[in-house]
Image 1: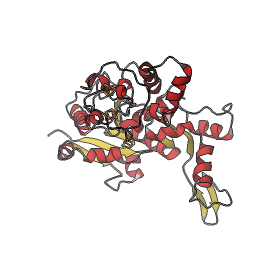
Image 2 (image 1 turned 180 degrees about the vertical axis):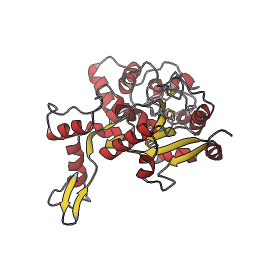
Image 3 (image 1 turned 45 degrees about the vertical axis):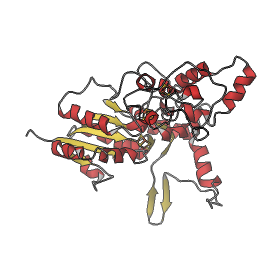
Image 4 (image 1 turned 90 degrees about the horizontal axis):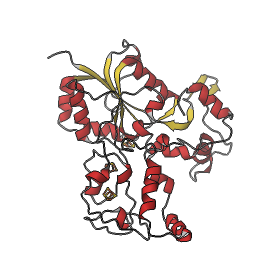
Length: 337
Ligand code: SF4
Ligand code: SF4
Ligand code: SF4
């Protein structure tokens, strides 16, 4: 056999689910082990940063990086892996789109710290101490990574070659990506592994173009498993979401939450979903529509569950951009905003 490929797996602001998804390919993991040596995989093997730092540049064939980028340490690891890798894959919704962690972009760092370190009922912090990047102690300086003002998707931090969406990516998609890499049959750079169309296009449920007089959360009704969920008043993101998952959630009588991100040609997944919702509302009366919209708990969370960092606004806009926090972050992170 020719030389084995060299893979790295890394996690940034991540729940760990994407790491488990790699294990979920079950016996196919043996195929991966047969074709590639794994040089970094913190969830499973105790590699250190210097093991990667000491490698020649471009030594790793493919780095799979999951998670959003929230801290200077995560950015540093992403940059290191970019330098050491021929190909970088944004693995999962958080790396591809910002994911669930980027819902925090509706708040800035001050608000998050205020909540986490002052207001939470279990916090006892009478002196109002917040984490500091550097704290001088008699034993020496104690350093923490900088907590950025916002969460970034991976390609806002480093150049990314391919995207594997999903929360997490499905085992079939992971296997397909690894097979394409092994067979040297990768799609053009910048491609997203997944379908070109929408989850709605793959969904077999009956669509009758029915309008609704109200929205329900999924636990409030037992939906008809044959009919379109949106037409039953359950917010389903299928029309604003790339297909390729095999309609996994719909098969379980659950609505699509949008984890594959927007399909080709859609710049803002939340705006697209909002526009779809407006087409199913059965009213032209402003007051009635307002009441109906008020039934949606956490509309921003529904619309941008996985893609807040990829929305046109990207994050909450704060002040004039001249605050100390923003200036510090800009000097630490030269990224597209
Ligand atoms: S994409 Fe989903 S499974 Fe993967 S790290 Fe993000 S939240 Fe976890
Ligand atoms: S909105 Fe949801 S339930 Fe309706 S067709 Fe699309 S994916 Fe299926
Ligand atoms: S149905 Fe939607 S939320 Fe569920 S796995 Fe597919 S893309 Fe993700």
